[in-house]
Amino acid sequence: MIEASDTCTQLWCVTPGGYELRRAPLDRSGDDMLTVRALASAVSRGTERLVLEGAVPHSEHQRMRAPFQNGDFPFPVQYGYQSVGVVEAGPAEWLGRTVFALHPHQDLYRLPVAAAMPVPDALPPERATLAANMETALNALWDSGAGPGDRITIVGGGVIGLLLTALAARLPGAEVTLVDVNPKRAELARSFGAAFALPAEITDDADIVFHTSASAAGLATALAAAAFEAKVVEVSWYGGRAPSVPLGESFHSRRLQLIGSQVGSVSASRRPRWPHARRLAKALALLDDVRLDRLVTHIVPFGEAPARLPALLTEGEDALAILLDYR
Image (cartoon, rainbow, N blue to C red; front, side, top):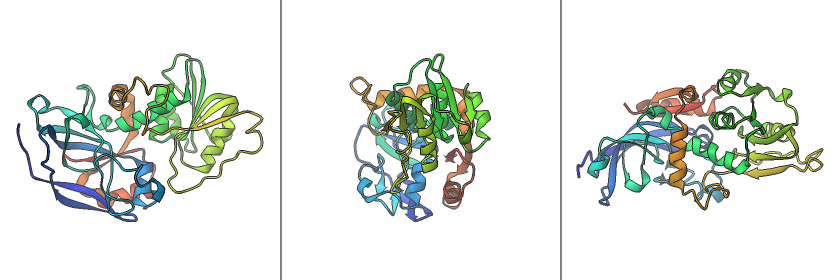
């Protein structure tokens, strides 16, 4: 057993729109523990914007807690759940291994061996940070029941929407369309083997529709894209906001199904056989696709995070995956 440094630096949300870096001691409890030096961590733009704004509803304060979170909602809170690093201390068989962990943004941390997932050797650390996002996309695909040959529409070209596009386009014979208000997403959609449409261009012929834009307009577009007795899977999380849901006009005559998908529980269709660890390992394996590197649009040095993250999260810049770099 090899030991490492005694202190770390953590990123905390301390006020609406405000971050700060804090020094803290490392927890030394437990024998079967790893000390991990972070290489990169991904900022979940939608969820972490709500956290930064103090918009996590009181009813969800406990359910929304991230593993290893410090502090409580709304503030001050240390949040995050997409970290990749190298094991510096712990059992000999783990030393030097690159691992993924559901850990907040922090340069050095300790966690149980059971909470670390080895990253495949061929997978770059930057892409591996998207593992939790890929889990969300995979779980939603399972919830939808989508299969070969289906017409599949994804409304919202953020990270989750694009990962869903990439996964759905792998289904044999599937006809996949990404819908977004930003025409710049068209080239990305085509790179994954999918078509692209603006909201005004959709037709109501999809067998499966995913909504990921976290907007009332996007949800209306998703419902409008669904064919008779189609399933619409809501993947967005709105925090305390209550979007308008257009259940009038043809919603009932088309007998649409609107369901929620959330990654905290493994999809019911897989739950008896798929523990969370198996799903996470599969998500990492599915990231073995160099095309996904294009989803990382911003890399921020960890020391600059308090100054740069608020604008990236809240001011409308065209950002997809935002990574914090610890090297």
